[in-house]
Length: 299
Ligand code: PMM
Image 1 (cartoon, rainbow, N blue to C red):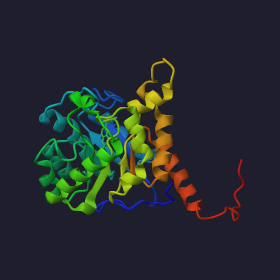
Image 2: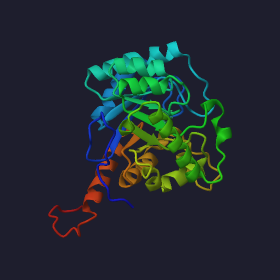
Image 3: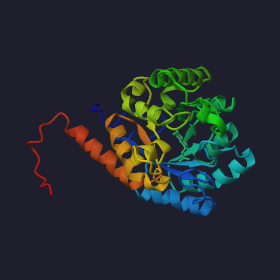
Image 4: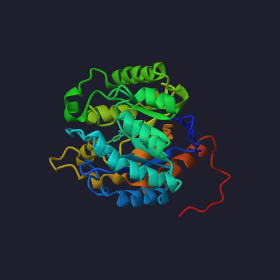
């Protein structure tokens, strides 16, 4: 297990001395984990501010659900959902990431104050995305992606999931760099749940070190995902707990990801993950010591 702390982040964002926590604001009626809750712009802004108060270092604003089977929303609607929320949060001093596969949305969100573009397709869905990100000099999250959500489950076929995700992520990184994006601004993400079944997600989490060896900061986005529900249901025939009952499991992944040197985690419930990264940082800091110098009494 890695003892690295404060993994170097992308150029253009603050450098935290621990794994960063990205809070999620889905301005959608249909996201799998919180769809409909923050659909109103004012509520979405308030939720973003609450996430920061709970310890989020940045807030990821998205206007299009990518849950398995989701259909796309049109561009005008995505802009209508996302821009006011990005603008208000940025004006309030929040570091905002925009979760979009559309170049126009990314460009307008950056103009409205977003600091990071999070594209689950890694630039594959819209050929204009990489040129826009390159021209803006924006930090860019490139996620492992095999196609749109409507039928992505059919693409969850791997002979060796780690090898294939590594190869495909490296290719996506190379495409972004060839398109002019500064490699120092790129973050990689294994895309948990995107064209992946539970064993694939778990195998990727078991090998974060190999993903980090691609040489870029890593974003881990396990929050409330289906594989956590499957793990919690175990071998029973009981149905998996609903998405909003997967936050403790999410925080467990956060602790592991932070210990493994992830740059950031993307989560819906921030408080527990903010605590988890602080505990992971303290353990990493103690890794080279024997603990004999402590004075604080334990309970
Ligand atoms: N997952 C979702 C949305 N955006 N962005 C990145 N970088 N990585 C992810 O795994 C990811 C994402 C889907 O989850 P949500 O509907 O709960 O936001």
